[in-house]
Image (cartoon, rainbow, N blue to C red; front, side, top):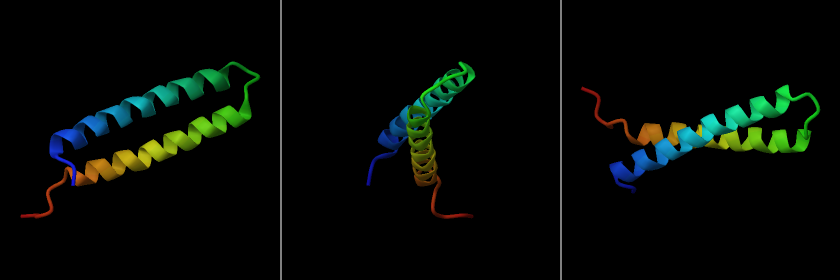
Length: 66
């Protein structure tokens, strides 16, 4: 299992990439004519990152609930 510090680093990178993709998708789609295949690929990557963010976040939550 990854150490907490490594999980946090990966989480921050994934969150940053997710935000960057959101901005990129917004710019591309607001420009009028755009490459739909490219936007679909970016959206798919964004969903993958969302799943990764959820997985990494859950690893940082302690197992025992008091």
